[in-house]
Each structure stands twice: as C-alpha cells, then as structure tokens.
Image 1 (spheres, rainbow, N blue to C red):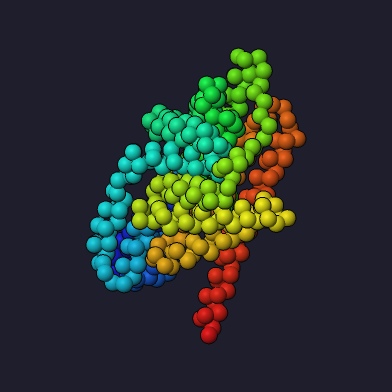
Image 2: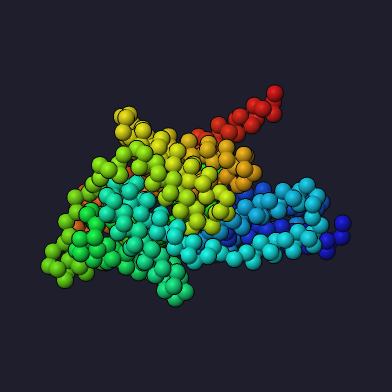
Length: 411
C-alpha cells in the first residue's frame, strides 16, 4: 500500500468519526468504527483519539486534528454510519463507494418540521402527565411546549447563541404557562412549566456524557456533562427571570407548593402510556429512524414502570428506583440493539430520558427566586443523586454484559 492510499483511508476514517461524533454517537463507538474502517482497508499503526468535540487521527505519515462543535443529535445518521461500517467490514464497498455512501448519509435531510412539532407537543403533554400533571395541565403543556419549540427553531437557533437561546426559550415557556394558568387553562402551574420546558432538556449530551464516564472516557464525559449543565443553567435563568419580573409587576411572588400528583394520571396504566408516548416523541426530536420509535418507547416505558414500582412499593425511594430503572434500561437497550441490529445508544438515550432530573431544574430555580434556599439546595442535591444513580445503573449493566461476553468466549 502506498503512502497516498494509506492517507486517503485515514482521511476517510476521520470523516466517518466526524459524522458520528457530531450527530450524537458516544466516544467508544466513534473510536471503534474508525478502527474498523482502517483495519479493513489494511492500514496499521493508526491512532485515534476522540474527545467530545474533536478527533485526533495519526498514521505513519498522516496527522489530522478536527474541531467538532457539540450540537444537537441526528441519531438516524449514527444508525446509517454504523450500518455502513458493517457493510465495509463485510467487503461490500470499495473505498470510493464507501466515501460516496458516507456523503449521502451526511446529506440526509432532518426530520420534517411537522414531525418535530408533533414530537415536541406529544412529548410535553406526556411528560407533564409523568411528573404528576392533570389532564388539563397536560393539554396546556402540549400547546405551550409546541409554541416553545417553534420559538426555539425559528427565532433562537438561527439568531442566538445556545446559552441565550435557552434563556429566552425558558423565559418564553414560563411566561406562556403563567398566562395560561391565569386564564384557567391548567391547574398546577409547576407541572405545566415542567412539561412545557422538557423539549429543551439536553437528553443526548447528558446521557452520552454519563455513558462516556461509565466507559472511563472521563475527559469527554465531563465535557459533555458541562455542555448539558450550561443548557440546564440557561433554562433555569430564563425561569428565574420570568418569575422575578412577574413578581415585580404583580407585587408578590407566585406561591407554588411543590410537585402535586393528579390521581387520574398517576394510575399505573396511564403512566405507562404516557411514558411510551413521551419517549417515542423524544425519539423524533433526537432524530431516531421511524422504525425504531416504538422500540425506543417500549424501553422508556419499561424503565419508567420499574421506577414507579420501586418508588411506590419499596423503601428504596427515588434514588434506588432510578438506579434499578437505569440498569433495566441499559439491559433493554442492549437487547434491542442486538435484536434489531441497531446501535444501542439509540435506545439508551431515549430510554433514560424519563429518568433525567429535568424537574429538578425548575424546582431549584423556583426555590431560589422565592428565597427558599434550603428547599433549593435539597432539590439540587436530589438531582445530583439521581444523576449518580443513572451512571451506576449504566455501569452495572455494561459490566454484567462484558462479563457475560468474556464468559461465553472462555467456554
């Protein structure tokens, strides 16, 4: 193999890694896929070092460094690139054919706007129910969540930075819910706001950050979690500003009494349906291929069911429930990944989403502006414990699956 051919192969591997990383793949998958490409085409002594926002590629006479900004996910492209790597390894493509196929994948159009709005609407309404909202609260969150997502796509993303866009979107969503509540459209303001702001939660960055940490990619994992934290903080600032401005105009702070659970939507069948619809809806927003909407929804539903059963019928509480549910979601993700020949990250990101402490963002913000610092610290600390429980669940499942694989090989 000539030096020029080797450099072309490494350049192609770097393009594959770039496509995976910018569309929501985890670090280990990016490195593994790049290595598969290089090995198949006969390049040895290659080295790939992948961070959350960059790829270092080197060979005997090749070196390349790429900066890749952290942005939203298009998991359909991750699925297609994963399939491309399988087909390359099976000898289906020459290098030129593989490069052409990769270009087709990179040019895949995003989900239609109507589908994204449907996902935001159903996701907002369903997650409002998951977090205790009444049917009227869910209807209000559905309308407000659609409006917020429209505002985000048409106003914030084209014209603002990520931080400012999430501040404005958080403020806009909170303002809409306050207006709806005053008009009698909705009962529990807190639940309405939580449901409305759910489409802003950075589920891909948060889950991939936790997964990278569980895979011992600490630097990349921390960077992704910091990116997610910036979004959480921006949303919180928007919520705080809206409550402060309203209290200045009205002369008093709106009084909320914590999360209230509606007896109708709290029933187990209703919660399972809401989790199925909500998780499948966010699969749309994460760019999951349509044929995987229902499997992703099933993973989220079963994880949420496990969480509810533990919280309601055992003394383990929300942290123990999150740990068990996160472990189950990780196992189910692996099951569907093998069964459907699809990257497990598709199901893991969607399935873990109901467990992400998004409600803690709202309550921590509200308690700060209402000068309930003890309650704010308690809500924040609970969110941290939930996050740790999600990480431990993923680690447990990953290690059990690894031990099982080693055991099957030894036999």
